[in-house]
Length: 222
Image 1: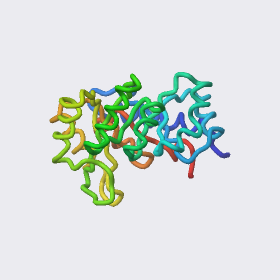
Image 2: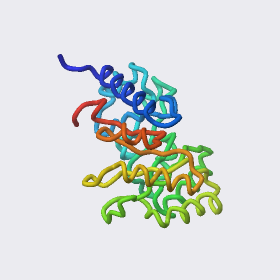
Image 3: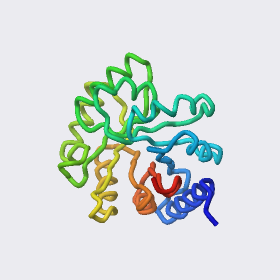
Image 4: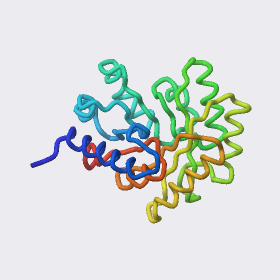
């Protein structure tokens, strides 16, 4: 029998709970599950909403604009997370639509967000994305530059940064990168960690993730 979306969602929640219990001093409520709905249409998302899920993640501003305003009208307590790279010319749209932005990775983006947040009077939760694998093709600030970017955000721009985000290299053991991000966040005085996806979110939870971004394990294959 084919699993329903609600059943897959419940299974992910149970796995998060077990992983949290395996961590030191953690409880399931320490971890927020972000259901990654990129490429899925509004009709695919509604069953997940009806099952009680409220935090969702999208990779692209333009795609999100096409489906989330209507869903937010029907489910006003939705929390929408931008988890993909952000271009500065989309900063205004991102601030208007998203409740959290996980992908600050350079000063230009930080400045654009600060300008729009001030203009719109909105304050989405903000994360700095760290390129823990130092991959040329991947977004994210280099680890050695994360402190400088954080200082710019806080001291010059007045942005409140909640934590760090990473996407480990696909060919490397994710636990190494999760442990590194946890250590870096501690050194920078940040408490939130956005890390872990469908294939490795349990490891991320055990290593301190406070947000996990899970798509295919909930929605099925794209």
